[in-house]
Length: 325
Image (cartoon, rainbow, N blue to C red; front, side, top):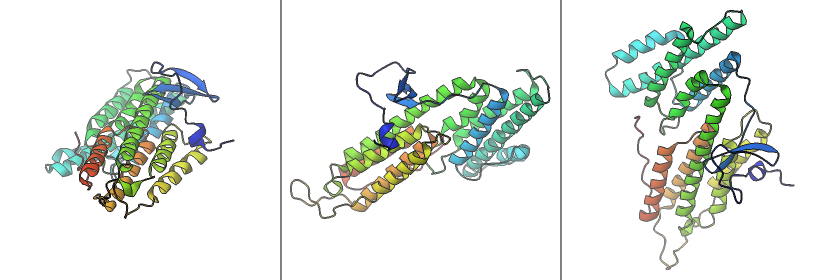
């Protein structure tokens, strides 16, 4: 029996299958939902209560700060100070970072409010949707989401707008509906993983020095797709995460043949060092998407273009510096 979760959970493509988006089906004993061409593992949502939403928003806030650039996790108690510093700043580069710090403080303020709303409910205080604290919580999340466009992923790649919008969505819709929106994003993340892997295969299998690399790329992408749909609370995470790491290490340990020649007998003109750097960049980008469980379309498109240039010209251009929208 194959105990490799990256193999037994590989249900991305099934024969005779092209169902409508959102179709659910039990596959290998686990319910899955179909989005963007992939069957995605589902989990039972929490009961739609204020307490459950508080825990979800707290988790989404931690998730946000885990993936964005450093230094933006400003306490909600410093909101007035963060806003004043942002409004007074005139240097564009400094103002961008201070916008992110203000967004972080707004996020934390919203989480603080929601935590206190739940505490009041536990004390028997009846809360209504029009309550001033509830409105303030929503306002903070909306403003943070608007400022989030200035913030980059921790890697320095593009910003991930979806991470800023998730707490507000969790605040404003039933938990079950929020989970469904996450499955849509996971499907899109899997699609980006495969787009990057396909570009790597299409590029490097045409270069003699990298002959034989395709199995390593495919194994890594397969493990990454499985990880993107697996929650950390899932018992299989103890096999799924090591599979991703090990597959990534095997990809980076691939041995090139620097003396390889093209089919015409002419030495290949591709810079090996540039190719290895490009493989590492692709591996890292897939890791970023896998951990965030969210697509990074701008970064994926930029990487694919770098692969095209490397194949055509023999060298890999530096990645462009991402600019916030």
